[in-house]
Image (cartoon, rainbow, N blue to C red; front, side, top):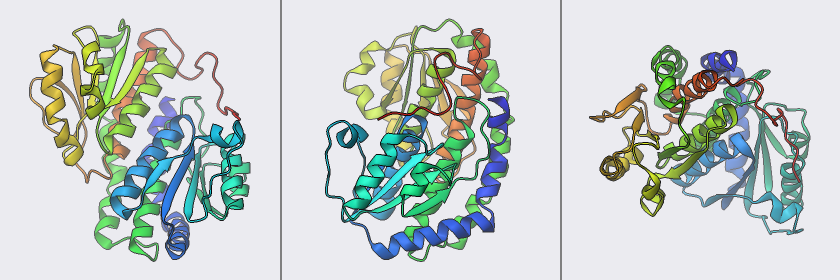
Length: 343
């Protein structure tokens, strides 16, 4: 897991190379030409959080309705929704889950434009879809996904921005900003704070993660990493949902990891953090925003769209360090394997 985490800056550089940006641009141009009226993502586990990020990008940057499909509607209940005007995107590291493949097969039969985003371009998912994006993350050693998750994020970002441009290409200013990601990721991973923070949660019984907008998928992915490596019950809420009831469970014995950036989503957390303070919750803020009076896992400031590519890095390292502090093996979580096949 440590090796996989450390490879992410190189993974960013690889996806941003001319070879891969050119391939993504061609797919983005094909999508733009079809002019879908809405976008449906289908995914499981970690990839579901990448898909959620893609849905935010789609609605905010493209102005198209976007949502996440329920694969069981197709595979368990036999539903055949009319997706003739949709782009249906399957996101999967392995591309091997039968239910996601069946969603894409059904969608394509109904006239949808289908796209597979996967680390295995020879997988059943990729073979079923009309279009494909190879996230080019390389072999992932640990069961807990890290580098494939961030590669999915970057591939979806390049796709959506390419569709927005119309011809698949990126404006020069965006290209320049993204080219800084490998160096910023290296700097983020060099920070020793996550490992130093791990003993603080060694005996925690449960934990809450929260964020809004682009940060919400990060909060969900952080909760999953903590659960699958440390077996620590971790509940993820959007900042807004947290105030609608779950806030009552927070207290000094329930740590809260709050993803707070410098954009609109981060600013909207301004009403959440004081309420957590009233509950005397043990809060750690992750992100670029300066927040007084709390421990902070600092991340370089970038455009809010790009922040999930950096914000998750210290949280991955925290999950790794916490698992080791609790005497667990983060490379082989009990009861889990790398590819989970569901129907």
